[in-house]
Length: 142
View (tube, rainbow, N blue to C red):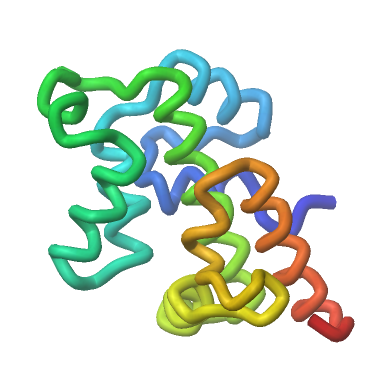
């Protein structure tokens, strides 16, 4: 059983229609998500425009972003999905988007005092953050 469903992840990405399986979500990521999906994920994580811009261009450089017409590359789409997955997990565990944002942007001792959002920029880092979140969810020391 997956607590963070493909629908929850796709909702963060603002995808329509929503995929109903991880296979469907994976196929859409492989084909390339719309640029708006990354913008939607970034908007969930940061409220300030400058913070949004910094995160977005940390994933897709400014020049590349301007060259992209409608869709991200599969690699960029994977990064957008990872960001959405980590946010969806944090929002589920904390039962609040505001508390999820606070968790993701506050240094954590189990991450060598790095922000979970910064650690999540790699797949293995995102897994570390998700592990901490699930430990918190299940009441295991984190």
